[in-house]
Amino acid sequence: MKAHGPPCILVVEDNPDARAAFEALLQQKGFGVVTAGDGQEALEVLRSGLKPRLILLDLMMPRKDGWQFREEQIADPSLAVFPVVVLSGAGQLERHTRQLDVKDFLEKPVDVERLLEVVSRYCGD
Image (cartoon, rainbow, N blue to C red; front, top):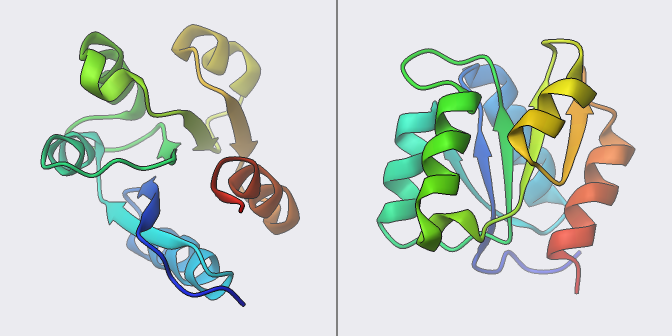
C-alpha cells in the first residue's frame, strides 16, 4: 500500500455515509482524499487552493448540485482544468455527462473495481 500523499481526489457527495465510505476506501488504497458535502463547499475548497487530479462529483445535492457546480467550475479558468467524473444514481448518465462535459461517469451503487480503475487513471503513479 502506498502512503497517503497530498490530496489527489476531491469527493463531492452530500450523503455522509456514502462520502465516508468513498473516503475510507480510497484512503485504504493509498489515495489522498478531501471531501465536500455539496457543490458550494467543493467550490470553496478549490478556491482555497486545493489542486486535485480528479473530482468525483455527485449530481443530486442540496444547496448547489452537480450541474450548478460544473457550470461555475467551467466558467472559472483556474478551476476548469480539474477533471470531473460523475457519481450518480440519477439515471440517464450518458446524456447528463455529455451535457456536463465530464471525463467519465459511475452509476450508483458504484462498482468498486471500476471506481478504483477510474481513480488510478488520474491518480496512479
